[in-house]
Image (cartoon, rainbow, N blue to C red; front, side):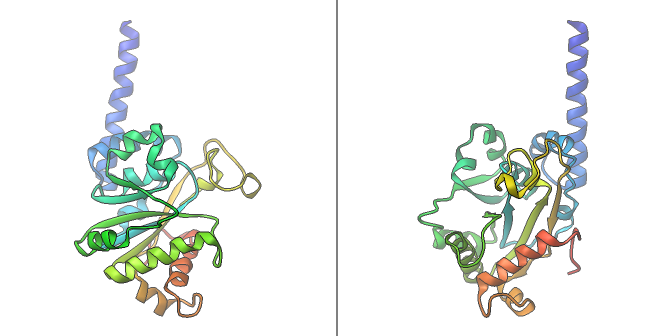
Length: 235
């Protein structure tokens, strides 16, 4: 009994020490760090890109949703005043309950897309949103309408967008991509990539997306973050 107590106390001490280090390293809250610590250790998560991004108020974090683990990672790493718009599974999965308690969340209804006016008000008030985009969507498909909705909200609110991609997540056992599209591995290392905040208007002017479309510009930006090995961009 004494030995078991010592082992448990040692594990708890290591857990708290890891959480304290994450608070300092990632600039997240202690509650976030406590829940993120086991994920960071198991999958060797490198999230320096998010720490280095100086996201302004009125921002939409746009995540390439590749695995069931992505919402847990983002809830633990993004600012705790971010409103996360989750898919039906993530909004109801019991194992995600502890992570959902870290920030405000709402369920995404694919038939109604977004309550645009409400989200525009959140952003105009200096709020932050996190949206999870299907990783295998292509232009001219039904799923691409989510890009149109997010681009429209960003334009109306004059908000900036921060694209996020978790390299390695597509290979997890609980990947959302088809089995023939990835090589499943139990413990791949994960690297969170992010690019500098930019408005949709800036992306349209900077890139060469589908001619003249804001959704094409957003899609191009998401493609860019999925391909780059750079943790951050120069402002």
